[in-house]
Amino acid sequence: MATLPRTRPKYRRLVWRNTVAGWSFILPNFIGFVGLTLLPVAVLFYVAFTNWNVFGVAEWTGTANFRRLWSDASFWTALRNTVYYAVFHIPLTLAAALGLALLLNRKLRGVRFFRTVAFFPYITSIVAIAVVWNQLFSPEYGPINALLGAVGVDNPPGWTASATWSMPAVIIVGTWRYMGYYMLLFLAGLQTIPAQLYEAAETDGASPWQRFVHVTMPGLRHTTFFVTVLLTIESFKVFDLILVMTGGGPGQSTLVLSQYIYQKGFEENQFGYASAVSIVLFAICFGITVIQFWVNKRRNS
Image 1 (cartoon, rainbow, N blue to C red):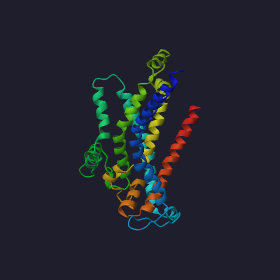
Image 2 (tube, rainbow, N blue to C red):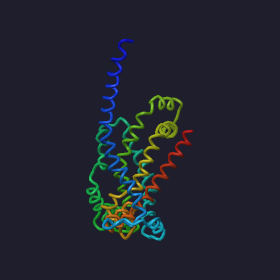
Image 3 (cartoon, rainbow, N blue to C red):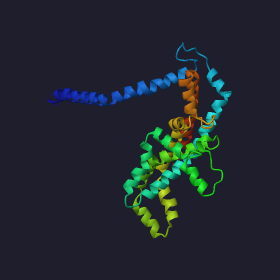
Image 4 (cartoon, rainbow, N blue to C red):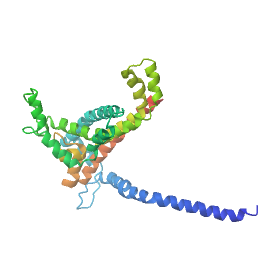
């Protein structure tokens, strides 16, 4: 009892020192998050209800920007193209990444080299990717159309020079670029599945397909959900690939919402209207993500 008054100040100093040390680690990141993310998002929601164009004072216009969206044909074209890209890019990338992960999860000679090669497009400059693929897709001189002509295709696609084929070309490049990254996530998931489950299924006479359906896929359920959420968000906010590869053309055949926001905000200085389109894009991503979490929760229960 005689030592209690002397230990309490020492304990309080220790708690205070640990608190200061903890805040010193958290505070820089928290300040950066508030200054670079939270505050701009809050300003975005305000600017969306004004006609701010950088040079003048922002005047409150209420829901005028959102009512303007209904009659804006370019906005609906960008929305349709964004959905078009997402509908094909998500399942194609998911299937390609899973197939690569299953292939490279085996004990093969040089498997680490092939994993690195598969991941390499993800860390390659997007400008270099666009230049190379535009040359490959060249209607007159590209090796892809030369190959199609060699196998008997009389009228090969115009790819990025065609309003019909430009979006499929972008989807192909997008799938090729991102499948290596998601392959790594699937590889991590595959290595958490106990080998005893495969041995038990093989002992029971399960075929490779049955082992894939009843052991691999259930074991990858959480990984697949995580990859699907990331892919959905990434697909709806696609911007850099289309900007450097097609510029949204020909015409508006590859114009997507992110690029439309860029055009209205940074090329035409209509930041109020661009902010309204940004909120629509945010609402779409948020709504789809909530639905995905709700479906996943129902499946788990």
